[in-house]
Image (tube, rainbow, N blue to C red):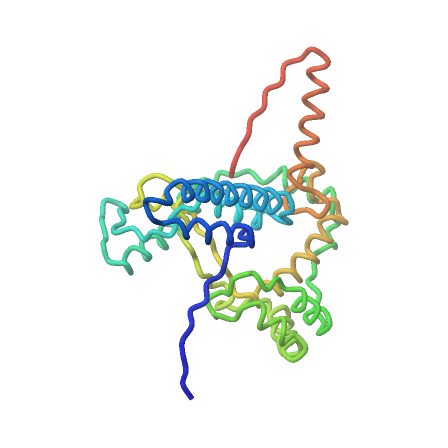
Length: 297
């Protein structure tokens, strides 16, 4: 049997039949004597494409369900070559050119940032206020105990994984885990509970696939990159189990400050901003001056 390889081309979502027909008419008039007709259909095609793109991206941005989807559409409008591998990297008075040395240099920089920021200041830190706060909220006999997880809970979490997320170093993506949830949940439950009872978290689940994102400035300076770490998907099942119980404990014991909006259910940036604006307006209405200091950690 004779076979033939055919290349497929994915058409842009804003492309429509009217644009296709207009392009065909435009391409019909390619000789000098047809210049007037060519110009007419060229301008019409350009106008159709512009309006189609405008309508598509306006609807896409307005209907975006999350920030990732929104930024994907924005990047389509303004594409940039973000993943350019730098030819060299400078770090601590040394310059490396080999690709492996470059990624190792970035890894050393990322892993040492926290240590350099903290330095030797930890020994001088006063935790007495925090200790007094917790002692007022908790009795001496009250401690946090991590409960074991059930097969049903593991299976449910596997089935609710976002298949659009990337895989970690193990290469096992969330789609595979979601499809095999019923089969692997008993074994995964055993491993998680074993980790809880032994008070040890598997070292291999701590390993992450790190992507260096260029923030701006010279590309050969490590501090101009931001690391994005992708952990193995299985570790996220364990993390959610711990997070759910720990958050419930902190919430029930009122150990979270009322003004904390980050990483809390029912709270967001809008919650913090609403409170701030309300406070500012109260002071301004009383004829006072408002000064604000923003800290970014």
